[in-house]
Amino acid sequence: MDTENKSEEFAEKPLYLTNQFLIAMPSLNDSSFSGSVTYLCQHSEEGAFGVVINRHSSITVGEVMNQMNIDNVSDNVKSLPVFDGGPVEPERGFILHPPSGKWDSTLYMTDSMALTTSRDILEAIAKDEGPSEFLIALGYAGWGAQQLEQEIINNAWLNVSADSSIIFDTPVEQRSKAAAAILGVNIDVLSSQVGHA
Image (cartoon, rainbow, N blue to C red; front, side, top):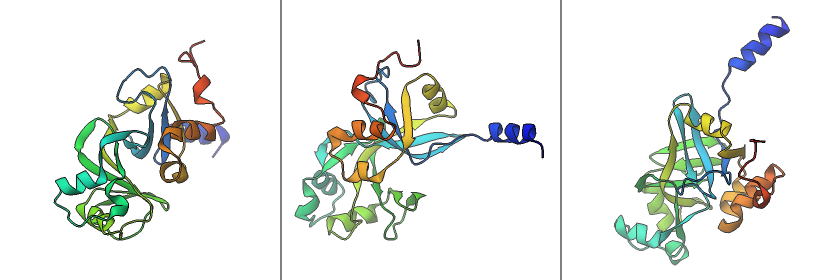
């Protein structure tokens, strides 16, 4: 195979962004995503979905457990914040965690990150028997086919390989800055006109 054919073959392969952070650019005026960092759980030719990791909702894990009739919730988790995972299906729960345990409905992104949507993981978390680290979110962010790619071209998002320590160990108000720092970017000084010189 000659070099020209190899480069054509490479150019035809799409670049998918599963297990990456999407960092909202200042030019993104959508109130659902302004200032957000989204962990991309899945990205394919059919579209993409992810969970916003830097926005607390107004409810706690204890309140979610109560709504789901899960009793005897550990004091260790009761007061933890639930995250606003995105504007789609805000009544549905998503738990990001390292892959551990066997749950009824889990999507594995990498050997260090999984997403579970089944009740059994919440019951385990309530008893301090769940994953050692987790982020519980209500709702998700979703994009149709080619929508995310177009938004990236339009400078709505920066994308960078995800780092689980930002999800589980970094204070929520520092996650956007920490994610951008992976790229060597100071998010505070980015102009809303980046890429439109």
